[in-house]
Length: 170
Image (tube, rainbow, N blue to C red; front, side, top):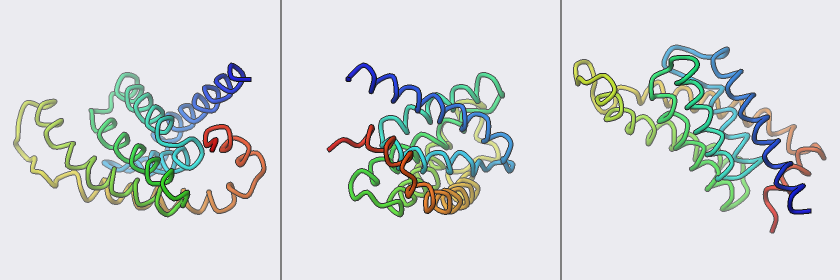
């Protein structure tokens, strides 16, 4: 039974990675990736912090390698996925997952982007600590609202509950 559960978890993770990688560039506003936040919150609620973070890391690396997106793909997704998953695990509330995404991506991710982009571009010209914050907050808030609207219906389905039970065994 253990091997089958691992295969199911990896399969769900692969599907979430594919959805994130495919949807994020389609519904992208310059400097904002609301679909990344949709998938971060959904993954946090469905799979928990570890798998949601793995999804965010893999998708960020794929975006950087295949789509030429700068390291903002990494800083903009990973902190939100991790914090959303940790807060959801704490109380099992989608609102806490949303709060984790908004704080993780909107605040922590945006602030972590400054030193990363200084390193990446080799300059501080036109960069200051809060340069990414408005767009990261905008993407995280709008994406989290969309995720909540999706999760309201999705969490009631037996398939979602079955998959969630696979990741959240008590």
